[in-house]
Image 1 (cartoon, one colour):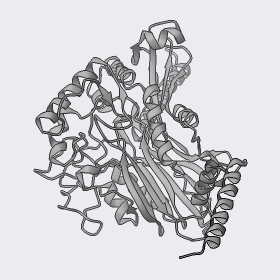
Image 2: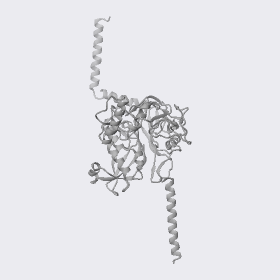
Image 3: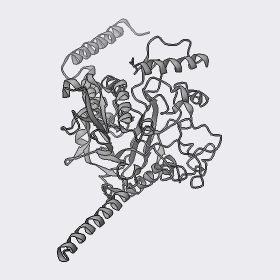
Image 4: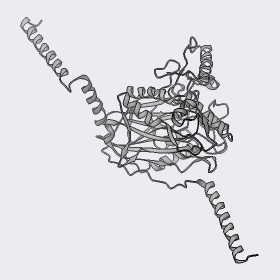
Length: 509
């Protein structure tokens, strides 16, 4: 037992430490927030753990349904615009920012970074009505964790995707609430464009040493020349103390043709080729539009109409792995067998699916909900399309799915369009019948996007690597094959007209 004098001495020492500790906390720069900031900075600078996020912002409307309305362009345009209004990005972007604040990722890969652009008439000046990238950046800044598009030497990690321009007479839509204050009319001609954007936390912006965007050579033509879907990827190299790491964000093609290799698989092959000379570790963040079960064979549930087996694309093996999977018609397995590891969580576990809910964000799609439940997903997700993939010695410390809980998730918003209310109620009644919910919620709540996101904590290897050569730039005709044929026909017509006129001049009647 210590003597009283020893106890007094110990008490005095403890008291001195407490007083000094209180003084340090009171001094500027020594508070908890300063320590947290220092810890966050050290987390990145030491190359120990870097958090990344893959997030599809969702353009706000179901393009597949709109395509089914063609060739009635006005009907397709009005349908999409009404869904954009119902899936109100101005409201849901704050929920997306809240996700970011919780995880503070160093890098975010965005897909469907959309701009909706309109003109107040058929031939007026086009204005940006909704800019999802700018809105997302503003929301993260307002939430206290600002992000910027990765930039180096004036090059942005931003890659434009496909676009549907504001077509006079054909894409005219009605929305008095949105258009009257801006155009002084209740109708406008509208279109949209998509992009992939690679964001970095603002305090890391100076660590970007190279950035850019690249296009895929393979494109899907919905209507030759007129409606061709462009895809590509954005990339950036970040210099950490452990070495440089290349980050890529991409959105591979969703549409596919029966009996053919899916365009997503072809684009994944190009991505592998483009990264073949990259000597640094690589992280791919994206919506690659390939579930590990694709192509689906006979009897395999396929409620979202993913690629199906054909003579060109045999059915995927049961319980595929990187060693056993048939990769030729599957973008995910193409990348896995090309040297990338999946950060997780397990894509074959039904709890980790990331797509399949309602296009209006009002929870499960009743048409797919039964299949989702059979797959082990109580929230209506039926397919895994979103991933964090790594190579080059990166180790995964943790990975999780975010934004996938309904109707009791943290990041839901109150939505009230009649179609949203009806769909949410129908889905909730099915979940009550299945024993998943106790009762139908009184309030209709919507998800932040139509995709769940993926967050991963990655341990970077000590490579000391410097920036690798940039990905190659591939020339691609801006007009495509059918456009070239059209130009040839036009040239032949012009030549024929000129020749006819010359003959008339040389041999007048």
